[in-house]
Length: 172
Image 1 (cartoon, rainbow, N blue to C red):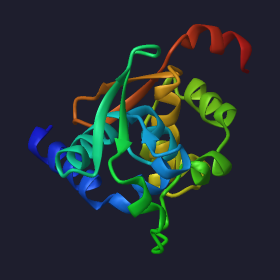
Image 2: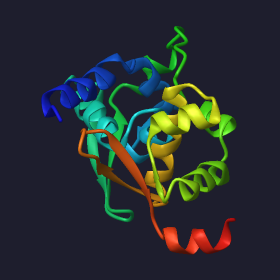
Image 3: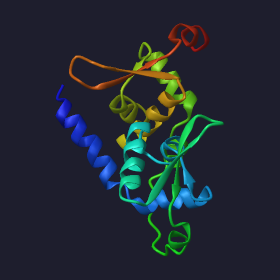
Image 4: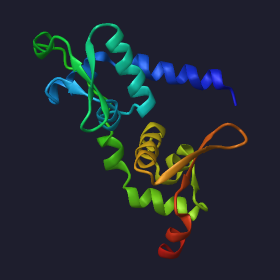
């Protein structure tokens, strides 16, 4: 496993994700956004979303505040009126593609058939969907605590089904 390669891929995903898309999501939420909202609304993981928002905060696009009621960091657009006139429409890679392509139950059933362990590549091949869609779906289910993440001996991410024994009894 090469940690530097993984980190470069992490950085590349964050850098290639357009600031305009983040701003559009924030504008849809009254100029406010959290790492959770950004991660849920896009293909970015929670850590990539945090990095993206902190970078935009450093560049002066957002100001950071804290919501004591929900115990979360909130990023607020500094000049909301300036961005409301944003005419350039950028296609945001949203997860609805992944959600419509594969259902949660299909992914869980496949994981049960594969002894509770699943990779994005295996999901891609078994369900005949693009790899990025398979990866996004597994990340979504991991955020919902359906899967945990492990690294196999070759350094690949393996999604391990939580409560595999219960599913094994339910599914044939």
